[in-house]
Length: 116
Image (cartoon, rainbow, N blue to C red):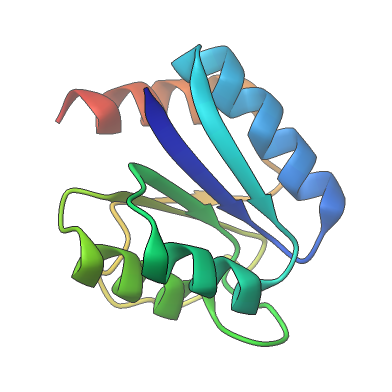
């Protein structure tokens, strides 16, 4: 069973990403965080399959979380979902999507990512 970690300081985004993930992946373990710092603690001590994160958060950036997740397990798939269309991110993410997130876009891109 896949483990999906969802991180965003916006609770609505976390809830939406959780619902979408369940719809696309099916049975999986979803761990939700509203604090990037708490997510980092979890990532440092647990194996995860997918990280879905915002970038701009108060404590730690999503870019840093992605870097740590991939350092711990290079097979971890990382997805950035951000409202900042001009965000220049290094290539630490496997997939980048723009908010507002639409289910069909999320589904299409996640299925492609999981098939790689």
